[in-house]
Length: 396
Image 1: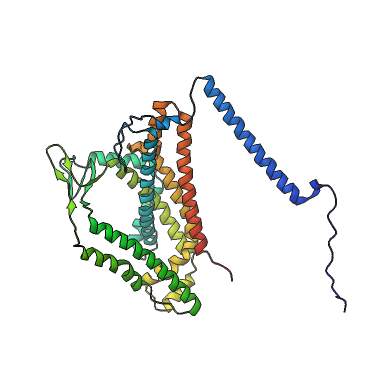
Image 2: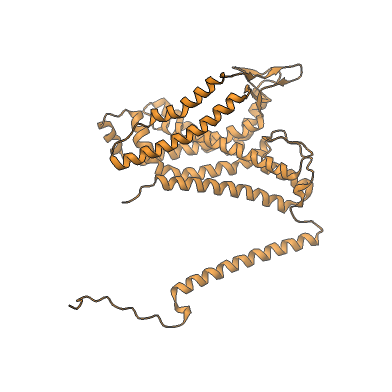
């Protein structure tokens, strides 16, 4: 029996290749890429020729030369006799330190303030609103200058610090704190903790899959805590549980021992955290308000408290709205860290400026700074976009 609705047969394409839409799309893209590459090549070639005409050397060979740069705040050991390459590494680590710590603290503070703005307590809500509206409308540069001046005028001298307690001292020289003396027990407990953390992740993945397959949710909180903490505590106690601290002690001219955070790092960190947290607070508040009020009513009908409603119902749904603009604030925080030069904190920008002055390699130094911020920004965007895809609603 013949098919009453035969599928029409498409006639083979005829005509010149430039009339094919797909071919033209690829062709135009190739032409555009070649044009951009040619433009970049012309700019680079002219720059090199102009530098040579003025007798200026080019290249990155200076990275292996002795720097002579004095760096007071470094995560890794530093000596002025080290190379410009190592100085560049010190600057990268200092930028990462203030960026990572700042992102964590700004997220915590911003989330608290954003939730506080939605509080039914009039005083708490108004104080949070005043903080947000005030901080967001004062330039970050002015805030950094104010905080640095506050450290210089309001805090006591280094030899007469403000005693916070527990071995913590605050002065114009920064924050001094006790350091734990690491022994074999600490390394062993740390290794066990990492293994336990991996096991906890595996257990939670299994529990989630089982819940999706059967509809029955295995207990997760208590088993996860037990899996994470008990082996670590047992190993630590079995090895004697050493807990000796190196506390800063005052001598005739200065404090020795313990750990210290310089006022420059504290200034930059406080400024970035306070400023960025004000924007994050608005993002969190708007994200929670974007969730339908019916969700709050349904949670109340189930007998959930306000805290449980916020933690289990509102925030998980608000994350889908919060994550994209939060990514922008994380990127802004890292890029704003370049203002650390105002407080004397030696991040990658400050160190490359000194490198530029000593070597005359301005173009190379700027390219190195651009490479650092581009790499950090792309890494943050990749991590946040990956997480955003994981929590996005998926149609079945």
